[in-house]
Image (cartoon, rainbow, N blue to C red; front, side):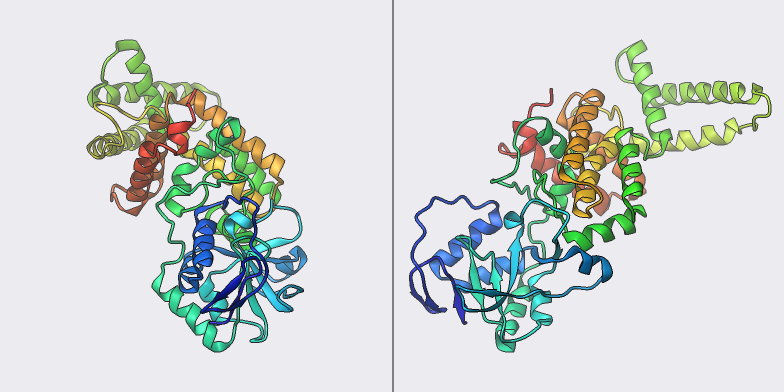
Length: 416
């Protein structure tokens, strides 16, 4: 394998390596750069490629080009004076700069680089200028080797793990707390929970995410969705209504709230509200019977989910979900970062939204565990249909990681 690295001395089976050793202490920003550095230090280029095959790789492009060519990918080679050849530079997540208006970064896996390469005379430069850098020749034979590694390693191999940005990521304070409110989804997706300078799946990927899942294609639409989430207004209001009724019963009577008692009080509220609406001049006459039936079914779903949560340890003892606002607030934490990745906002605006997500969550809940239960219930009510499939299992696994990892944000950031 023809490989060149400019910051180490000596020879390896990979070829000639020029330059002198770097004596400056260096802390790899993430687990990916750590593993790249270790493989490079050993001269184990097969292991190096294995890490690359499971990592997100980013390539800078002018924003004007990305906006004019949505859905496409291209290369912008540069002349590397140390390698003395034209190269295509790719960066791993921890090496990305803070998001700026221009350039933007497109994400593509190693498999994609192996399949479509501009010119065999250009080399692949990984994290050039860093202690974990490496340069790879890109002839068809070399690219077949890349593809073989990609076939053996699942893309985004970090899914389901807690990944932390060690350099440049916050660990304490209001920003960290707000970021940690989105940590369930970060663990599930294998993304860095404390990366405020978010690139996510790259500029095009974040725009596609928002368009496909949220119908967001403009800054104005993003800002509107962000505010709805922060106000807890993006989900079905019936969910929070029935839980609020149960909270009121618990405050008044104390102890656990029986399902029959809960249903009777909800029915009473619905009929009283319908009577008030019918008395208003010119108002439509609501159907309290139909609304009651809908809410009774919802209560049944919630009770069954809570029973499963207790069995799986997501709720303790006789615990119950106090609110589903976490479903909106947790997504608000992520929406801020998705908007930044899509360049619908800047870092300061995204950070402000993240801090607010943490603050409203603190008001609504008394612990990370209660926040998590509310988030998972909201997700299940939205997606799962009582199948207890991936929509639930992914969050249960993430909950267990976050509540047990002693170095994780939910164990190191105090709730209050």
